[in-house]
Length: 363
Image (cartoon, rainbow, N blue to C red; front, side, top):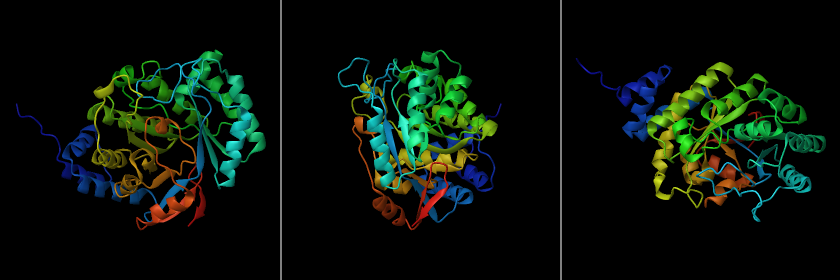
């Protein structure tokens, strides 16, 4: 019996250029090809069909981690502290307010508010904080993550819908895609066994979409995952997007080592070329997600700029404040002027956007 050979990556690129939806097998063929030049060019063409070719967007916001106390013990995280650890903290509202004021003074439009899974915080704490922020400041509250939402629900003894209803009423505008890691339970059982399952993560996001909240989606690869796992992750996102349409952007990055992992050398060594290929294949495969963000904060500015050549249309945030990746030993930051310069150096126009991709300013 004759075996069917996998498609060549050139055949896959032809189909992608023709607007044909790629299969998992197609995505695997592209990744296996290692042909970053041709795959990246195809991803750039796909990006230019979906967004304004000569523009690259970015957002001015601040990533505030309201607590680093956490009980989930994720294998890859160097940021969290166990309850009662002397290095643990919960930020008082006065500190959060000052950070918001600084953000607004710098032309910021959003607060990215995330933290650990604190066993002592109930939904009333979040309602009070969110309502206090909204009463004082004209800022978009892009907050929590699916795992945080479920943690709040569990410790507050509420169901998911009630939790989202109350958080949204208090001021939650949208949910970031943190905690996705790899949406394959075999992987999650190794690196984050006490976090959400794949179905739970997607369930929170789709419930938010049905309530009119858009969200982002992420992928952190390079722990114990395979390329097949990475493609399954993309498929789960694309299938969910087909149902609810609420993912406005996707961003991926490689695992950042730096003391967070108990597994040491079990995690993979990944390269800049691996990252750029993952970005390119993601752009071609996720045909229903409008925007792809460059993860310059984990990869470095030069690789972040190169990601614009292989499918990304957005440079994400200037990162006024960032603590989780920094705790893993990686630290890249920009101000608005340098972000604009980095975009213009690629021959494109810089456009400041808000969290919902509405234009704030063209440079």
